Image (cartoon, rainbow, N blue to C red):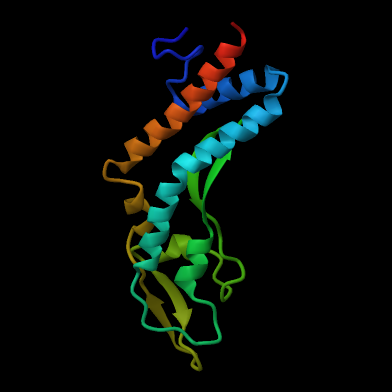
Length: 170
């Protein structure tokens, strides 16, 4: 047994998730347990996703055309907690996916938080301008002590599942 009370080492996040995933696959109802663990991990990261969504929604807007979708709202819809157990990558993270259908601006989540901003054409003109969003809106949502808090919450969910598996063998 590991020092922290778990039946195996959960100290490092990706390696611990790999080990837990292997144990879940070995269980008779491992598929259901993996699904439950993934759900619990996503639930622990939902507050982080909500903070990131509020970060983009707080970005100032000069106004949008009434026929086009709002850029900030479209970016906020694409922010989700993501969990993967096994394979090439194991882990839990909050991800802002690309916004492919929004005004042909697929990299909107990345560009709106960049200090360099992005280039766009002025409506009805051939003039190009640089537009800047809110610098580091996504990164700030997950920093400032919160990062460690979410890491601890994910680790607690992993330990609870590990104890549940260990309790079955007794």
